[in-house]
Length: 123
Image (cartoon, rainbow, N blue to C red; front, side):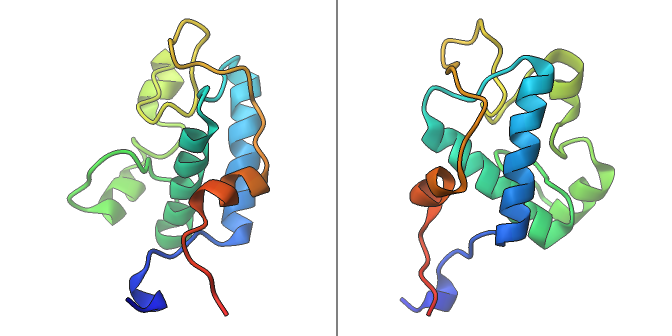
C-alpha cells in the first residue's frame, strides 16, 4: 500500500481551529468531552478533514449521499441543529452531565488528537 492510498489527515490549521472551537463550545454550553478521549480526537479530526475538503465542519459521524450538498445546507455542520436545539450530539463530542459516557474534560491537546489519529507519515 502506498502513502497516497492511505487516509489523509486534516491540516494543522483546520485541526487547531476545530480543537479550539470544540473546547470553547463545550465550555459555553456546559457540556464535556467523552470519557474516552480517543472518541473526541477522532471526531475533531473528522470535523477538521471536512473543513479542509468541504469548507465546513460537516458532522463526520453520519453517512451522506452528497457531502457537498449537506455542507451547504448546514444542518449537520458542527454544531449541528440537534446539538444547538436540544444538546444532542450524535458524535459524542459534546455530552451533558447525565450522559453515561460523559467525561470531565473540556480540553484536548493537538498531541492527544494526533496520538490517536496519526495514521500517515509523510516524508
